[in-house]
Amino acid sequence: MPPNESPHLPSGLTRREFVQTTAAAGLMMTIPALAQEPPKNTDDLKVAIIGPGSQGRLLMTMALKIPGIRFVAVCDIWPYHQRYARNILKKYGHQAAVYTDYRELLAKEHDLDAVIVATPDWMHVEHATACLKAGKHVYCEKEVSNTIEKAAELVKVARQTGKLCQVGHQRRSQPRYWHSLKMIEKDKVCGRITHVYGQWNRTRALERGWPKKHPLDAETLKRFGYGSMEELRNWRWYRKYSGGPIADLGSHQLDIFNWFLKTPPRAVLASGGLDYYTQVPGRNWYDNIETVYEWQTAAGVVRGMYQVLNTTSMGGFYEQFMGDEGTLVISDDGKTGYVVREVTAKRREWEDEADKIEKMGRDAIELKIGETLTPEGKKDPKAQKLLEASKKDSRLLHLENFFRAIREGTPLSCPPDVAFETTVTVLRANEAVESGCKVKFKPEEFTV
Ligand SMILES: NC(=O)c1ccc[n+]([C@@H]2O[C@H](COP(=O)([O-])OP(=O)(O)OC[C@H]3O[C@@H](n4cnc5c(N)ncnc54)[C@H](O)[C@@H]3O)[C@@H](O)[C@H]2O)c1
Image (tube, rainbow, N blue to C red; front, side, top):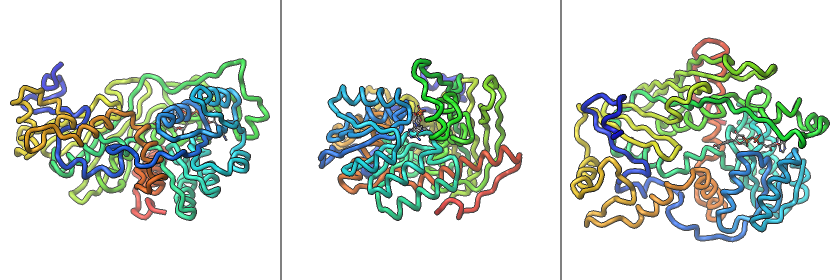
């Protein structure tokens, strides 16, 4: 259905797509150290991974695409995942030593440059800080932790050691997000933002089994703090191991709101519960949560609803910025990105370029970076590179940003102090659910 015929779009509003990011001069200036230029240095970096479960293996296979990345060790408490990861690496010609305990890994692998930490959330800080203290750079998956105290510890240790730590909020390395920010700030596509909305809806709560021939023995489970295979596999459902759905999924999107609005929130109200997926005794995280946040921005108050639902996939996952001139919608799904302008909004400069492309016979609602015209009416070659980068998976871009920072000293997209702000934002929403009251944030809570 053509976008203007969407049943959700009131007549008179105009909609422009920027699936692979829109045309706009100046974008190149706004994106720091992303993938627009090939890396200057591709010397070998020796890398280990702790926790090659589903996300860890994904990161591993993406990192294997980056020139000069050499995996030398894998660490996992579960032999099944040790073998799985080691065999993938073998296929790519990487001979990795295998460890069960990260302490042994760090004691033996002196030459490591970097470690990827993709264990369940409750272990991130223990693993990441040990690696930083051992002199290694760290790529640590989100959510930094399931407690604010532990998340603060990561910020302190990263500061003390001076080693790099990238936290896995990968949208921060995606040109489409940088471009959206530029459209909001420079092109003023939304005018003054007054509200935001975000959601992560899906029809299943992540439910994981395991091959019955390959369980982890009870003694090892106990030694590493897990009560059973059910807990090891479905750690997201337990407060001991996870910060719940608002941390697991919401953190990615609330991070975007904080980033784009240039401030963490001032308050949150929330409601949530374990209402539908009640079959497994002992699980104690919500299967749905709805929140209302408030931000005090420089332009005024912004209110926003955010939800995670596991019983309906309606709308999928996306972030929406609504202002007095228009609305910008963006998602890391790679397909969603558009601006809707209010009929009453005054005409802005960027709209002329859209019309110019339309007159040339192109589809003006499909403005792409690669089709950006130079003032002479030619395609901009730099923009083409950025278009290519925006097609990459955000996780690959985030890893590229990390390894480039190690090699060339360029800035990280998501250092621990940025991720700490997100951790406070999401974990205190759980407090709002528990108390049934509005939680007010103090500005000093967001810094360590
Ligand atoms: N950035 C993203 O988009 C994204 C997406 C999915 C998951 N994640 C994050 O990645 C992390 C892993 O998630 P997952 O879905 O892959 O979980 P998973 O359960 O599939 O993987 C975790 C792995 O860690 C291992 N492990 C557990 N405790 C350990 C310990 N003490 N020492 C060594 N290994 C240990 C497990 O055996 C397993 O192999 C989580 O923090 C999650 O939030 C991020």
